[in-house]
Amino acid sequence: MKPLTSPASIRVMGRWTRYRVAFATILTKEILRFSRIWIQTLLPSVITTALYFVIFGRLIGERIGPMGGFAYLDFIVPGLVLMSVITNAYSNVVSSFYSSKFSHFIEELLVAPVPNWIILAGYVAGGVARGLAVGLAVTLVALVFTDLQIHSILTSLMIFTLTAILFALGGFINAVYANSFDDISIIPTFVLTPLTYLGGVFYSIDLLPEFWRWLSQANPVLYMVNAFRYGFLGVSDIDLGLALAIILGFIVALTFYSLRLLDRGVGIKT
Image (cartoon, rainbow, N blue to C red):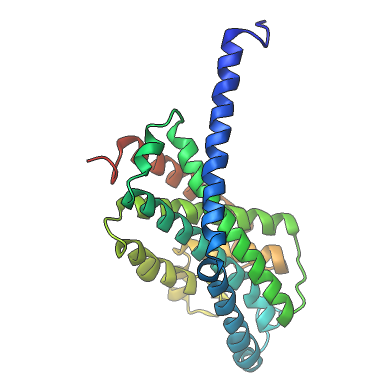
């Protein structure tokens, strides 16, 4: 057995120290970036969600009545919280990484003595941090309108985090392919928004006709919303195990694809 002070051990320790410092630097930069402009990054989601609570929860919700055995406002709270997490985790990474391309300082990261997975992990962690910050703020706003009763804290936190990771990866891929600032708004507008609004945030798929229920099951956001709703209320239209498998499957696939894009220098090297 080699002693801990052997040259090989010192090299390994030095390498992992370098990786840790690189990851912490990227993450710190990302957190400072969105926290310094919190009026643009954090506050809009809080205000928008508060309006959802007032309009759908108070005004329209009383006319709709109970859904899934719960008051309508309680039913939509998990979906609204997760919707804010999805939007902000995605937006943070897509705007930050594209800005690094636009400003041409991404090359400095790529030539640094750290692997690409550290760079990817730093940006994704920054997206998760913003998603969690906004999600927590929206949850606090929800407490003003309703008494939250969390069925499973562990499930809620797990889905909370995994969903943020998944959409942070999606934002990274969007940023890699984007060639202008207009390109980073196409996917959120024409793909992300329809998927979230049609993902069971405001309704149970049990209310849909058979064809539309079947079509909704092709929407991955539906599984995330229902899994998160299970963590809050203990009810779900989708099997929890299936939802977790789908979320983890997408995370693995997008992680490998993102690393492949970085390795090949797609959208970066000319």
